[in-house]
Image 1 (cartoon, rainbow, N blue to C red):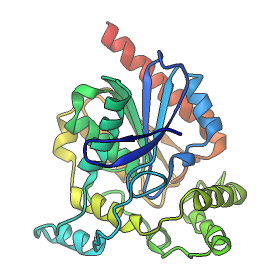
Image 2 (cartoon, rainbow, N blue to C red):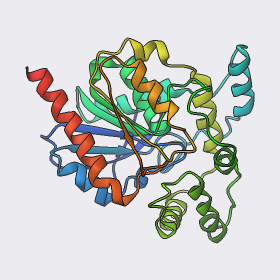
Image 3 (cartoon, helix red, strand yellow):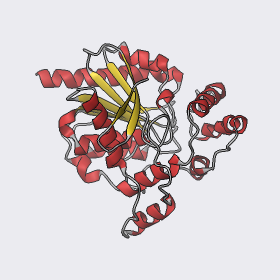
Image 4 (cartoon, rainbow, N blue to C red):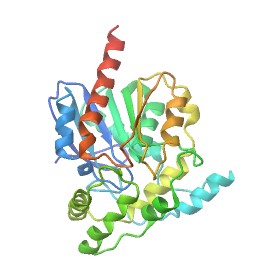
Length: 298
């Protein structure tokens, strides 16, 4: 896969699929997840919607740049945000991560793209839309929230599972990945699929240190409510009723804030994108993009 060095000296690993002449869809990944988390078969469904799909690894994960030696305590950042105190210095924020995606579009000579992201990736694409609106044709924010820590709060079990230190050994890491069932779709939870992705992710790049900096970036970036209220971009919010990691209130508030947004709540989806729902998700994303293009043409 190709790699590009962005102006911030961050190198981003990326993958493109589909016809370069079709509308571009840039995908931002969630917390600690690599671009392979959006599986090739799902990407092909998006390509079948007539899209040129661009995936990339966020900084501090996968094969993109790592900010080794830059230490941060994300819990101190969260405590300061909740108390209204000055935010401690952090290595980067969601604005920097959004700029990485925009820099990738620059590298590919794409002036304007449709963007989608799940979980932290949803936060990143929201930030792209707020800070780089001229580069964004439409947004799809999946199982995400607005940055208000009081909204979409995780259950105690989901939060503990997310923040647990991952085992260093491959066998133990893969076994521990089943903790994801806490937030997975109840109807479609697939232990074999969870373990397979964990094994592939471990083999591609095991780098747990980056999670602290990514979490600090989320907390330090604060509430995007004002920016979301001022958007004039076609916006689709997708959330799962089963989501215990970012509970549905996160999606609801996002949709309420963005003028003219659409909200799709899926009864059988948790904080994951199960294979059984891929056709629904691909059609929702593709349909949103087609409708946004039609609106522009009109």
